[in-house]
Image 1 (cartoon, one colour):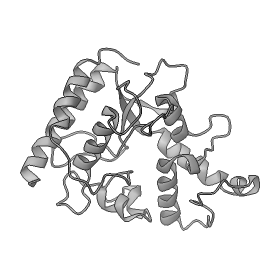
Image 2: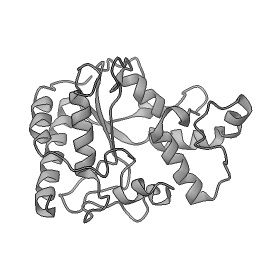
Image 3: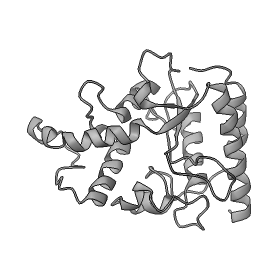
Image 4: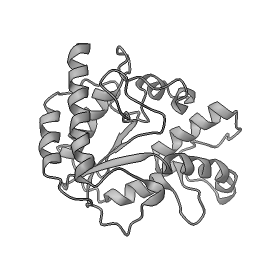
Length: 236
């Protein structure tokens, strides 16, 4: 996809998100959200980050992460359940990075930036209580960072599976936004925490995403997203 086409598609993408923001009553942060809000059962979410601004597609905040949930056949995870996994635990301030790739890569970036020593961070196996206790301070730092990121969401209440519309929107939004092995558009700021991540895909894409950053996108997804956003009339 030529850079000129991609700029045009990014401009349209952000215009659609402006409409979405009005439809859901404004962006929110996980720090202020809870399960008491009437969330849609399923959907796609779009995170921003303080200090991260667009530079090629216009003015305003850039999207730094796109995600959804329950894509595997028979999956039953709800939207708020997934968001709460990213948020962490309100009572302790911590969280479980083994249940959230978002938390994991933010944590690895903090390790890279601050020179922390967390040798078990990112181990996929279920960790013993003493290991989790040793990681608690970093989990709290991750919660503080993710908790302040404004996000938007759109309800797409389809069934889990390979033909999921949520998966289609997620995949193509990430591919459009990603700078991985492409001429960079709306690149991250010099101060972006993700520059310190140990994952090349995060650093080069300029996103808190690993999947789909290397994929081409289908511009037709913008038509579908536009229709979905037009049907969003009130906050969830």
